[in-house]
Length: 101
Image 1 (cartoon, rainbow, N blue to C red):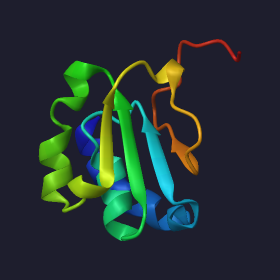
Image 2 (tube, helix red, strand yellow):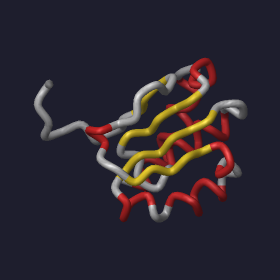
Image 3 (cartoon, rainbow, N blue to C red):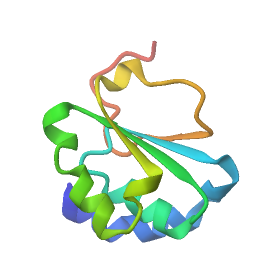
Image 4 (cartoon, rainbow, N blue to C red):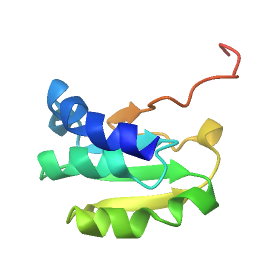
């Protein structure tokens, strides 16, 4: 998944104007590869990365590598309990096994 995200992230970041939303919340975003890429493209945007504690443990290193650590909050938690109030939410390849509700 990490390698697939690394390859696709630049295309995703440029395909949509994430910068128009202020804050991007990546639900189930792993160690932050996609969010870090988006934040690197949109220099004024802020991010919230939400995933399980064991998964987001690797996020600070990824965010530092992209130079966006200071603009991204890392949250260990359950993606079904996503924080509200962010400009746009990203959920890539994680919504499966859930009911429509």
